[in-house]
Length: 278
Image 1 (spheres, rainbow, N blue to C red):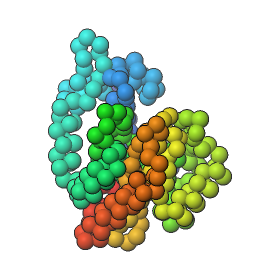
Image 2: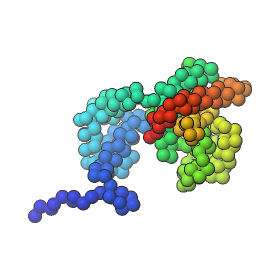
Image 3: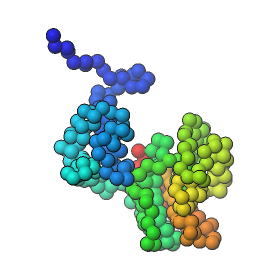
Image 4: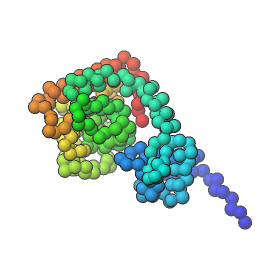
C-alpha cells in the first residue's frame, strides 16, 4: 500500500503554522551561509559536520545550488564556493545600497585621515554585518570581509551599537547573549562586559583591544538615524605595533566626525536609516 505524503502544515518553534517551505528553505540558506563564511572552500563532508544534516540531504542541497549556479564546485578538490548567479544578485543589491552609498564619502575621508582600514557595519540579530570596508594603504591588510558577521561583544562596532541603544532594548538584547572567548583579552564575564558598555556610552565611542583578533585594535562609534536610534556603526582598525601615540586625535576625533557626517546625511533622507536593516 502506498503511503500518502505528509501534507500537514509546518509549524515554527512555538507550534504556530509556518510559511510552507520554510524548513527546506532554511536548510538551503544554512548551507549557503556556511560556504560564504568558510575561510577555505568546504566539501560535502565538512557541510555535513557543520549542519548535522544527513549526507543525502546535503548532496541534494548542493546539487540544486550548483545547478542554479548559486554554488560552484572545484572538480579536483570538491570544495564549494559561491557561484556567479549569487554574486550577480548580490551586485545588483549592492548597487542599490543607499546607506552604504550615503556613507561612502565620509568613510573615504576617515580612511585617508587615519591611514587605517575602516568598516561600516549594520546590526543583524545578535551580530553585526560588515557592509563596507575600505582598506588601509598599508601593506598589511585586515582579514575581515564585506558580508562577514561579527559578534557584538568582541568588536568595536558591536559595542558601539549596543551602548547607543535605549536601556530597555540593550537589556533585552544582552539577555542570554553568549560571551565566548576569542582571545585572551575577550571579556567573558557579564558584569565586566556591561561595565564596558557603560563606559562606552559615557565616552561616545568604543574599543576592541585585541578582543576579537590578537594584534588588532579597533575604535568604533555608532551612526544614529533621524530619530536618534543607532542604525549602524563605523570602526577604524589598526594594528597594535603601528598604533599612533595619541589615539584620541589620530583615530577617535575623525571617527566621530565621520559618524556625524553620515548621521547628517541620514537626517536629510530618513529612508536611508532603513536601507540596510537585515
